[in-house]
Length: 118
Image (cartoon, rainbow, N blue to C red; front, side, top):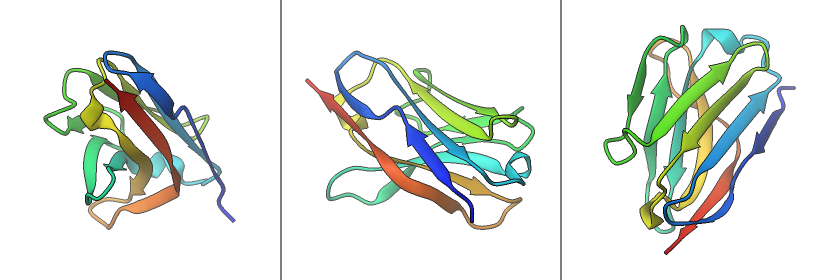
């Protein structure tokens, strides 16, 4: 059974930084493109960042572009999202996910809470 370990969530003041990470025991981790999604209270889950399986390409939600970095460590089977200059609107539960090719996203773990206060 695949296990997922999430870390790095928490509370921070606006302007601060946080890194959320997700480590999985999935043996085929390196084949997946990876993503981060978030869900704010009362809102739909939204895409935040994407990283290709090769690690060469990234894509970000416009509102986080320039202040967030998604990265992967295939040996550690970990995907991380570093976020700087946090704003209140970044508050939400952050979920990591993996995708094979153009298949559906598979959400891993229960999510980790990020709370940004003004």
